Length: 182
Image 1 (cartoon, rainbow, N blue to C red):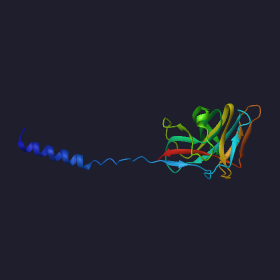
Image 2: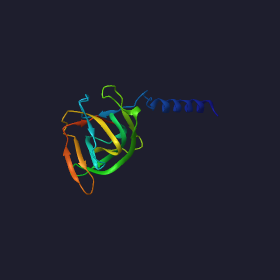
Image 3: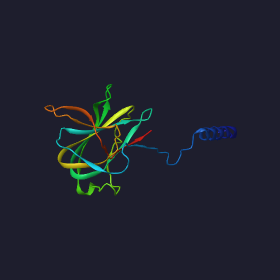
């Protein structure tokens, strides 16, 4: 190789490397959505497995990747957590993600200890607009903590085909957090 060629290769490599933006350390960002007032005042029980508490989440503009779903549990049992798409009528639509969760003694919170049950959602596809998070019991007598704030985003419904009930607003809001990555 000629000495002039080596200089040109070095210059090209240096310019190519200089134009690549440096990787920012710890560039991860998250948004945590919640509608409660962060103070526990009551709990939510599930009278039958057909009853589901649903919370409507309006996401910021653009697509977001769900990261985690957090809630505070008061009593043991089995729950099903479902994330729904929204219909054009602003009701829960098709399920996007569903997970069953056994609430054990180790998961329980007194509502003031900062203990949260965490469900990992990183395998979900990005979402946008409005999504709904539903919580219903599948066994035992589980209970989750709630605040007394009237958020206008918390509802109950009954999906039992024999006793269907549409969305009814709740006077409490579950201690439920949805963490997303912009």
